[in-house]
Length: 110
Length: 124
Image (spheres, one colour):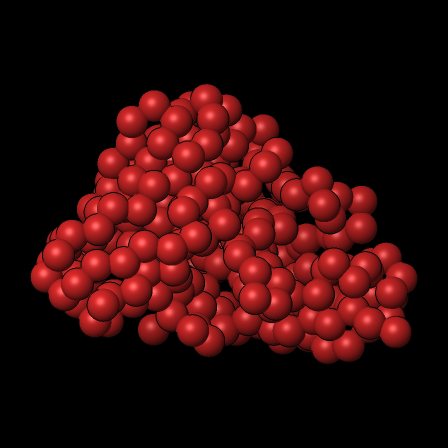
Protein backbone atom coordinates (compact mmCIF):
# COMPACT_ATOMS: atom_id res chain seq x y z
CA UNK A 1 0.00 0.00 0.00
CA UNK A 2 1.18 3.53 -0.77
CA UNK A 3 1.81 6.17 1.83
CA UNK A 4 -0.89 8.71 2.51
CA UNK A 5 -0.54 11.94 0.51
CA UNK A 6 0.34 15.16 2.28
CA UNK A 7 1.52 18.48 0.82
CA UNK A 8 5.28 18.78 1.32
CA UNK A 9 4.98 22.24 2.80
CA UNK A 10 2.57 24.70 4.37
CA UNK A 11 3.02 28.12 5.88
CA UNK A 12 1.28 30.90 7.70
CA UNK A 13 1.98 34.01 9.71
CA UNK A 14 1.65 34.12 13.49
CA UNK A 15 -1.98 34.25 14.50
CA UNK A 16 -3.23 32.87 11.20
CA UNK A 17 -4.78 29.47 10.60
CA UNK A 18 -3.37 26.75 8.40
CA UNK A 19 -4.84 23.44 7.24
CA UNK A 20 -2.78 20.39 6.32
CA UNK A 21 -4.48 17.68 4.29
CA UNK A 22 -3.91 13.94 4.29
CA UNK A 23 -5.43 12.00 1.43
CA UNK A 24 -5.80 8.26 1.37
CA UNK A 25 -8.43 5.87 0.12
CA UNK A 26 -11.56 4.10 1.26
CA UNK A 27 -9.29 1.33 2.54
CA UNK A 28 -7.57 3.53 5.06
CA UNK A 29 -8.53 7.14 5.89
CA UNK A 30 -12.02 6.79 4.49
CA UNK A 31 -12.67 3.42 6.02
CA UNK A 32 -11.73 3.94 9.65
CA UNK A 33 -11.86 6.66 12.27
CA UNK A 34 -8.32 5.91 13.34
CA UNK A 35 -6.38 8.84 11.95
CA UNK A 36 -3.69 10.49 14.02
CA UNK A 37 -1.49 13.53 13.52
CA UNK A 38 2.05 13.75 14.86
CA UNK A 39 4.27 16.80 15.30
CA UNK A 40 8.01 16.34 14.99
CA UNK A 41 10.58 19.01 15.75
CA UNK A 42 14.11 18.54 14.33
CA UNK A 43 16.02 15.87 16.19
CA UNK A 44 13.04 14.96 18.36
CA UNK A 45 10.65 12.04 18.54
CA UNK A 46 7.14 12.50 17.13
CA UNK A 47 4.41 13.76 19.45
CA UNK A 48 0.74 12.93 19.01
CA UNK A 49 -1.40 16.03 18.49
CA UNK A 50 -4.67 14.47 17.31
CA UNK A 51 -5.91 10.88 17.47
CA UNK A 52 -9.04 9.11 16.23
CA UNK A 53 -9.60 11.91 13.69
CA UNK A 54 -10.50 14.73 16.07
CA UNK A 55 -9.54 13.87 19.65
CA UNK A 56 -6.90 15.91 21.38
CA UNK A 57 -4.67 14.38 24.08
CA UNK A 58 -4.39 16.28 27.32
CA UNK A 59 -1.74 18.95 27.15
CA UNK A 60 -2.16 19.65 23.44
CA UNK A 61 -3.36 23.22 22.86
CA UNK A 62 -6.90 23.56 21.58
CA UNK A 63 -5.47 25.49 18.65
CA UNK A 64 -4.97 22.06 17.11
CA UNK A 65 -8.01 20.29 15.70
CA UNK A 66 -8.72 17.49 13.27
CA UNK A 67 -11.46 16.51 10.86
CA UNK A 68 -12.19 14.06 8.10
CA UNK A 69 -14.28 14.14 4.94
CA UNK A 70 -14.38 11.06 2.77
CA UNK A 71 -10.86 9.87 2.11
CA UNK A 72 -9.18 13.07 3.27
CA UNK A 73 -8.28 14.00 6.82
CA UNK A 74 -7.21 17.48 7.85
CA UNK A 75 -5.20 19.03 10.64
CA UNK A 76 -6.16 22.61 11.41
CA UNK A 77 -3.79 24.81 13.38
CA UNK A 78 -5.37 28.08 14.36
CA UNK A 79 -3.65 31.07 15.95
CA UNK A 80 -0.25 29.95 14.67
CA UNK A 81 2.62 30.27 17.13
CA UNK A 82 6.35 30.21 16.32
CA UNK A 83 6.70 26.94 18.24
CA UNK A 84 4.25 25.28 15.83
CA UNK A 85 6.95 25.27 13.16
CA UNK A 86 7.71 21.57 12.70
CA UNK A 87 7.07 18.56 10.49
CA UNK A 88 3.59 17.06 10.71
CA UNK A 89 2.70 13.49 9.81
CA UNK A 90 -0.70 11.91 9.46
CA UNK A 91 -1.24 8.22 10.06
CA UNK A 92 -4.16 5.91 9.47
CA UNK A 93 -5.14 2.37 10.23
CA UNK A 94 -5.32 0.66 6.84
CA UNK A 95 -7.09 -2.58 7.65
CA UNK A 96 -5.65 -6.08 7.92
CA UNK A 97 -3.46 -4.94 10.79
CA UNK A 98 -1.58 -2.46 8.66
CA UNK A 99 -0.69 1.15 9.36
CA UNK A 100 0.19 3.93 6.94
CA UNK A 101 1.92 7.27 7.43
CA UNK A 102 1.83 10.30 5.21
CA UNK A 103 4.99 11.67 3.67
CA UNK A 104 5.02 14.60 6.06
CA UNK A 105 4.38 18.34 5.78
CA UNK A 106 6.90 20.97 6.81
CA UNK A 107 5.00 23.79 8.47
CA UNK A 108 6.75 27.15 8.39
CA UNK A 109 5.63 30.06 10.57
CA UNK A 110 6.54 33.15 8.59
CA UNK B 1 6.91 9.09 34.58
CA UNK B 2 6.38 7.04 31.45
CA UNK B 3 9.59 6.29 29.59
CA UNK B 4 10.54 4.11 26.67
CA UNK B 5 14.17 3.83 25.66
CA UNK B 6 15.50 2.03 22.62
CA UNK B 7 18.93 0.44 22.33
CA UNK B 8 20.82 -2.03 20.19
CA UNK B 9 21.31 0.00 17.05
CA UNK B 10 24.59 0.19 15.22
CA UNK B 11 26.38 -0.68 12.00
CA UNK B 12 25.53 -3.93 10.28
CA UNK B 13 26.57 -5.38 6.96
CA UNK B 14 24.02 -6.21 4.27
CA UNK B 15 22.64 -9.62 5.08
CA UNK B 16 23.56 -9.22 8.74
CA UNK B 17 21.48 -9.11 11.90
CA UNK B 18 20.78 -6.80 14.81
CA UNK B 19 18.46 -7.02 17.81
CA UNK B 20 16.84 -3.86 19.05
CA UNK B 21 15.46 -3.49 22.57
CA UNK B 22 13.03 -1.03 24.06
CA UNK B 23 12.96 -0.75 27.84
CA UNK B 24 9.71 0.59 29.27
CA UNK B 25 8.97 2.08 32.67
CA UNK B 26 6.33 4.15 34.41
CA UNK B 27 3.33 2.17 33.21
CA UNK B 28 1.97 -1.37 33.32
CA UNK B 29 3.80 -2.64 30.25
CA UNK B 30 1.77 -5.83 29.96
CA UNK B 31 -1.44 -3.81 29.48
CA UNK B 32 -0.40 -2.06 26.28
CA UNK B 33 0.28 -2.94 22.67
CA UNK B 34 3.61 -1.68 21.39
CA UNK B 35 4.89 -0.80 17.94
CA UNK B 36 8.10 -0.10 16.06
CA UNK B 37 8.27 2.86 13.66
CA UNK B 38 11.32 3.86 11.65
CA UNK B 39 12.51 7.01 9.93
CA UNK B 40 15.10 6.86 7.18
CA UNK B 41 17.66 9.64 6.73
CA UNK B 42 15.83 12.83 5.77
CA UNK B 43 12.71 10.73 5.23
CA UNK B 44 9.27 10.31 6.71
CA UNK B 45 7.91 7.87 9.23
CA UNK B 46 7.27 4.23 8.33
CA UNK B 47 5.44 1.72 10.48
CA UNK B 48 7.48 -1.46 10.90
CA UNK B 49 5.82 -3.82 13.35
CA UNK B 50 3.32 -4.14 16.19
CA UNK B 51 2.63 -6.59 18.99
CA UNK B 52 -0.41 -7.04 21.21
CA UNK B 53 -0.26 -6.47 24.95
CA UNK B 54 0.08 -10.16 25.77
CA UNK B 55 2.45 -10.84 22.92
CA UNK B 56 0.27 -13.39 21.12
CA UNK B 57 -0.48 -11.26 18.07
CA UNK B 58 2.35 -10.02 15.86
CA UNK B 59 2.08 -7.69 12.89
CA UNK B 60 4.54 -6.57 10.21
CA UNK B 61 4.83 -4.18 7.30
CA UNK B 62 5.28 -5.91 3.96
CA UNK B 63 8.78 -4.43 3.68
CA UNK B 64 10.05 -6.39 6.70
CA UNK B 65 7.81 -9.44 6.91
CA UNK B 66 9.84 -12.62 6.94
CA UNK B 67 13.03 -10.79 7.97
CA UNK B 68 12.08 -9.04 11.23
CA UNK B 69 10.55 -10.60 14.35
CA UNK B 70 8.90 -8.62 17.13
CA UNK B 71 8.61 -9.99 20.64
CA UNK B 72 8.23 -8.81 24.22
CA UNK B 73 9.14 -9.90 27.72
CA UNK B 74 6.39 -8.64 30.00
CA UNK B 75 8.24 -9.86 33.09
CA UNK B 76 11.13 -7.53 32.28
CA UNK B 77 9.16 -4.74 30.53
CA UNK B 78 11.17 -5.01 27.34
CA UNK B 79 10.14 -4.94 23.69
CA UNK B 80 12.41 -6.48 21.06
CA UNK B 81 12.89 -6.34 17.32
CA UNK B 82 15.09 -9.05 15.82
CA UNK B 83 16.28 -7.84 12.43
CA UNK B 84 17.74 -10.41 10.01
CA UNK B 85 18.79 -10.26 6.35
CA UNK B 86 19.33 -6.55 6.69
CA UNK B 87 19.33 -4.37 3.59
CA UNK B 88 20.63 -0.89 2.89
CA UNK B 89 17.06 0.37 2.82
CA UNK B 90 16.61 -0.69 6.45
CA UNK B 91 18.96 2.13 7.44
CA UNK B 92 16.90 4.34 9.74
CA UNK B 93 16.26 5.64 13.21
CA UNK B 94 14.05 3.07 14.90
CA UNK B 95 11.48 4.23 17.45
CA UNK B 96 9.37 2.16 19.79
CA UNK B 97 5.97 3.61 20.56
CA UNK B 98 3.36 2.81 23.18
CA UNK B 99 -0.21 2.50 21.99
CA UNK B 100 -2.97 3.98 24.13
CA UNK B 101 -6.73 3.80 24.23
CA UNK B 102 -9.07 1.18 22.91
CA UNK B 103 -8.70 0.23 19.30
CA UNK B 104 -9.62 -2.58 16.99
CA UNK B 105 -5.97 -3.50 16.46
CA UNK B 106 -2.59 -3.32 18.12
CA UNK B 107 -1.45 -1.25 15.15
CA UNK B 108 -3.88 1.67 15.36
CA UNK B 109 -1.90 4.94 15.33
CA UNK B 110 -2.77 5.91 18.90
CA UNK B 111 0.84 6.36 20.01
CA UNK B 112 1.31 8.51 23.10
CA UNK B 113 4.88 7.80 24.12
CA UNK B 114 7.88 7.41 21.86
CA UNK B 115 11.50 6.79 22.71
CA UNK B 116 14.37 8.90 21.34
CA UNK B 117 15.15 6.17 18.82
CA UNK B 118 18.16 3.99 18.05
CA UNK B 119 20.06 4.34 14.79
CA UNK B 120 20.55 1.37 12.50
CA UNK B 121 22.99 1.70 9.61
CA UNK B 122 23.30 -1.08 7.06
CA UNK B 123 26.39 -0.70 4.95
CA UNK B 124 29.40 -2.66 3.77
